[in-house]
Image (tube, rainbow over the protein chains, first blue to last red):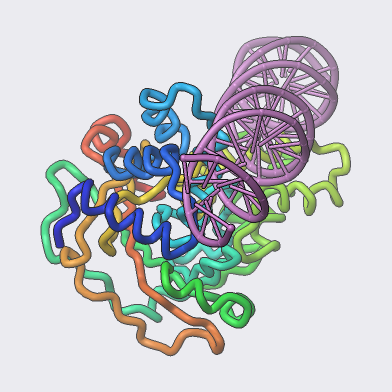
Length: 153
Length: 153
DNA sequence: TTCTTGTTTAATAATAATTATCCAAATGGC
DNA sequence: GCCATTTGGATAATTATTATTAAACAAGAA
């Protein structure tokens, strides 16, 4: 389970070849910036990091390649709901089924899931109110159209 | 546990009074639209519904009041990360601690949580790849500054 | 290597989502 | 109903993201 930056870049190059993606200096630099940044960076943040090494790079290139990496399963994103705000209309605590194909969200009653148990104490000073589960999957329509998406959730 | 529209509007009026919010026709119409729309509506969708009853209303008013409702705990949103895309840099499956105060996200190793168990079969045709848990709470900094947020996660 | 072709990049414009500003109008305690 | 305060609507501004296109580059064949 060695996840050194170099290991991940090596795998990245293999996956690019396998996916038929040209291996450009920009792409490697963008991917490296994501891996090295740690945490949960935004495209804007990656752009800032990459620009140090490639001052001429454009923000659109960063966005485009992040999208390419996501589609090819080389990267994951934190949420499929970025973009627009969505409101809950169900006032009860509940969980969600999230379609990674089309972003559709279905409610699951809290009772449909065994209570979520933390095995360890949360980090010091952190207060937890409630756990919410997202089941990532494909809705019937998307499962029919793009079953291959299963590979990279 | 009666959640009829009228019940929820009655509670809405009480909560407005308790929070010192003026009870306007617009606000009631917006809140009603959210409750009646069901599912996970966007501000744009609410705007469309409200405009049928108040043709002169502006999109900014809808946004402004949704924000007021969220801050007062009268509504919840599906995610605190809407707006900008955030990438994972941790290649392993894992869970998240999410601070509802500042939006900060902390990774929790998958092993820190008991395996999530669905008690029922998912809806027909739906394929599930993996569950992801978000523990909604407050990070140490926000817990110190706004402990009252606890009321509405 | 060099050539050829399809892909990728950078710049720019366009679009979508959200927030801020400012003044008129409506609300609520008295 | 009266007045101080809050709210609403129009508009502009900001932020996040995608589309377009000509020029530069990568990868495989010769």
